Picture 1: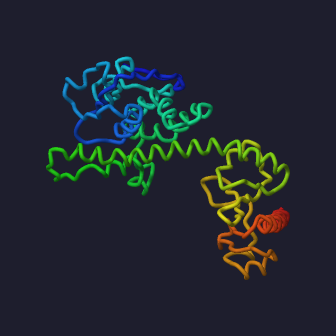
Picture 2: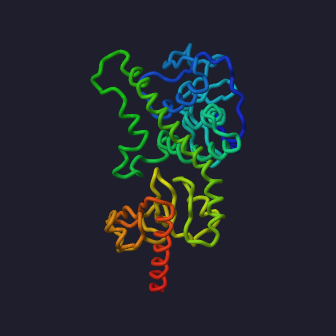
Picture 3: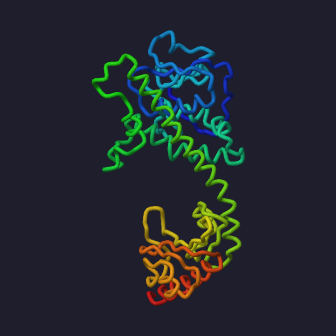
Length: 327
């Protein structure tokens, strides 16, 4: 069955009588392992059964079958992608079982993870594009592992695959033992990503308020360390050069990277501060309470808000002078 989803936001009614979650036996891959993370969260009392026996991969009301069975039929609760033609997204990119399970059960999974309703659709879409889609593409051979270059063996599918039993492990339960050993590890990655996206959504409004409060100032003061870049970009606050926030009993000032793909910043902290600590830094910058400046000039620390704001004012003044001199 060829299916293209045009709207992943559609809610899927979860069947409440599921007793078995059925996937294939033998070696495992990231897609069914990560699908199991989602499904076992939603159906904690259901048994995960790894089998290719026809009696188990035939659809019934009490089973969800995934990555096995040779068909995709959401009504029958079977989510395979190995048949030809296989299920496709609205942009014709292929689904793996993980993508299918996320499309149908992802919103309910987010609810089970206590993601606020107002953030759920955005987080569902971001997790799908950033986490699920690469798994789908790799599993279908639509993307080569080599795109990760020398880090290809460090990708999540590769790391999860490394948990398979070695070739000469002759135990009859080796594959199942490895699968169930890998499941909590896979779960930790999925849950960490969801928590991170939820935290980013919480930070968005806080950071947006801080950007608005900063106005035309070149210093952004946050109530704590948090993601702020999207709020700043949305406000087109290109004039902001440094960010200050409390960290434990200290305060920090940090530069703002030009993008996530570089270490280059809008402005560096003063060169004279680089690598200095305590008294030496206090003497050079003239601020009592200055404690540390990284030699790469992307972060500095002070003992109080008053001290860090003084350092920030100095840093802004020097950065603007450098920018004027470069014109």
